[in-house]
Structure formats: structure tokens, C-alpha cells
Image (cartoon, rainbow, N blue to C red; front, top):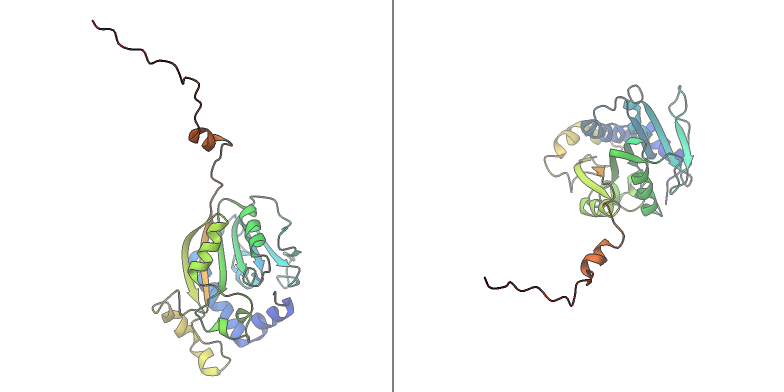
Length: 248
């Protein structure tokens, strides 16, 4: 089930833990995509905390929010770029997106296959997607006091397998949220330390979220009937006697 947009906004922008989570995830996304000059960048779910660094440089930034979640105007103090949409029917042309960020859009969806089909459709040739999901092995997925405790968490093999079924190729992965999901002052103050050194432990197990990059794989070329023809070749020449060589 999707979270309400008001709850997501309050977590990321009005709580110390949410601001820490936003900062930690965004640092890892920027490590993968440091710039997007002249590109179209799309966010789906509640990806707006990660889109702000691209507003000044990207050709276009769009934030799609599913109807079950609700929508809010964003960014504050500037022209709105957020749009309400159906999970399986995005109001975008096919193949026009260069970069796609999915946050709180896959693990909470009741139709993840439809979401991934739209991800594939809107990405252009050479397009890349970063999907952020709760880590099944992490602490954050085990507590419902944050948005990462809602929905279906993933292991990295599970996420990659699902993406491959929808014609995406795994490229790189990272993790974030190594600090415990706690509002206590000690954990918030030492959060940067845990994020800095957490990846040395494991990017698959210890982090609270998985951050995986995928590229779009084009459809394999097909020729209707070709495989059947090869398996059952024509027998037009059957019955013709092979000519014998005459003795010299």
C-alpha cells in the first residue's frame, strides 16, 4: 500500500531522522549521477527529495506521484513540476526520459509489473534508472516508524531478478541508511560516521535501503516464424537423386 503524501512530506522535511535519511540517500545517488546537464530527469513515487540537485542543470525535471499516494506542489517557491498519475499510465511520451529515479514507488505498489513496464516505456535509448527500495536485511525495513517499514522490502538478488524480467540490465548498486532508524540524539549526531564507514561492512546486508542502477535493454529483434522455419526446414528438394560423379 502507498503512503500518504502528507506523511512522506512530514517525514522528509519536518523530522530530524527524515532529513538525515534524505541526505544519506541523496549522497549515494549523486555519487552515481553527479550531473544531468541537458537531460530529462523523471522521479516516480516520492522522489522529490532526490531531484532538487538536478533542477538547475537538467533540461527538464518531472516528479510523478501515484494517485494512491496523492500529490503535492514541488519545488517550493518555484514553478510546479509535480504531476498526479496512474501507476500503469504515465502522462509521458515513449522514450523521452534520460534518467529515472524511483523512491517509494515500487515496494508500495500493488501492481509493480505495471510500474516497471512504464519505467521501460518512458526511458529512451541508453536511458538509466535508479531504484531505491528497503533492504530486506536492514533495520529500517523492520520498523514502521519510517516510510521504509511499509511495503515489500527486497534483497538485491530479488530486485535484480524482477528488473531483468522487465528488460533492465543491472549496472551498479550501493546502499545507504547504515545508522539505526532512531530519533535519539546520539544516533542522529553520529549518522555521518555510520554512513561513511557502513559500506565497508556490506552494501547488501547492513544498509537500510538498496540503491541500484539499471540500464534499459532494447527488445531482442524478432522475425515471426523464423525459429519454426529453422526447426522445420522446407523439404522442396527431397526425393531428388543426388548426381553421381562419372568415372574419368
